[in-house]
Length: 115
Image 1 (cartoon, rainbow, N blue to C red):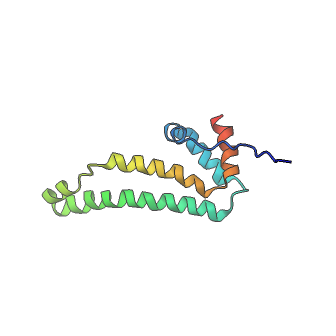
Image 2 (image 1 turned 60 degrees about the horizontal axis):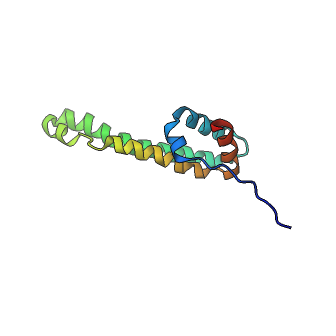
Image 3 (image 1 turned 60 degrees about the vertical axis):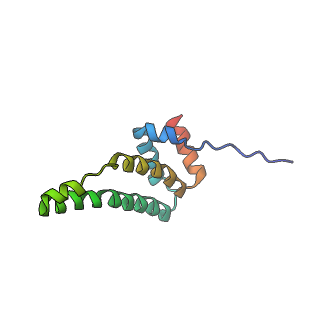
């Protein structure tokens, strides 16, 4: 006798990327779900914080320190040409960080929120 596995709805990257408020609801539901181990929640939040530090620290260093200490050189070096691409990459990485959570729990909340 063959067992049929229920197909789980996997989050679609475009849904997650373009529906920011629903994505925050999904992440919030996963963080407050008691079925998700604390270590996975901390790993998810730690990865987010680590990426934010990487995104903000070079900009803060360039704009505050270099622009104040060396106005001409700091302005030239402190211009983040690809800052928009950094934030797009950050958003896409957050989607991949959903793998920290159990697939069945992600699927359940995704179906409830995204319908």
